[in-house]
Image 1 (tube, rainbow, N blue to C red):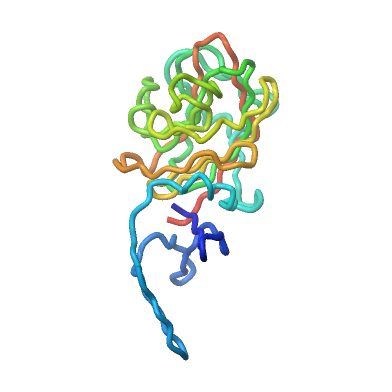
Image 2: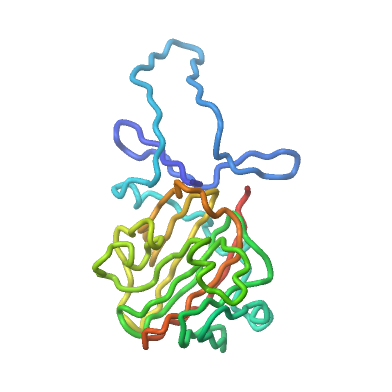
Length: 252
């Protein structure tokens, strides 16, 4: 994805995000290219060189993944009074937006942002569950759903909010449902606010919960690279709230 970890003799010696290069005044993501071995000024010997694709960052290295944006500069808020006019309900139930807090009711439905579509981005926000297993989700990169919330499920990707200890690991909070289970939920007790960050670059996804990366995944089917974002309201008798939702575009 947009993360580079350099290891020397098994130890992480460099960690960086969003590598890129500039053409005129436009920055492009450095996400493909050739491999080169350099010699400069003296002899150097290489052996056992190999390359292989990876679909996730090994769990032991997740602690080294830096944030894709070190602060909130460049982020656009999505739950203000002005932006509230751009949220539309698809399917049953809905959301109530008051004082910057979006509260889900009924369902199953989808509250989606119709102002524009997004490609590569960092999405940050906070959620609160009224009970430990209160169900919801953050959907990204789906086409306009009309009145069918299943469009987001079938054509986008979901950051799962639900049970921290479910029967199926892909139902666990922090997972990319139903494809990649989070390493752990890392959520706070019910009634407290949880901070999350979701990064989408190319067909690579990562989820950070309360400061820790819990999921990284590359979609092998490459089914969704551009689209709307939305929040799920789920009819389980429990409540999930969102606040401080904000987004920042990343180079393509």
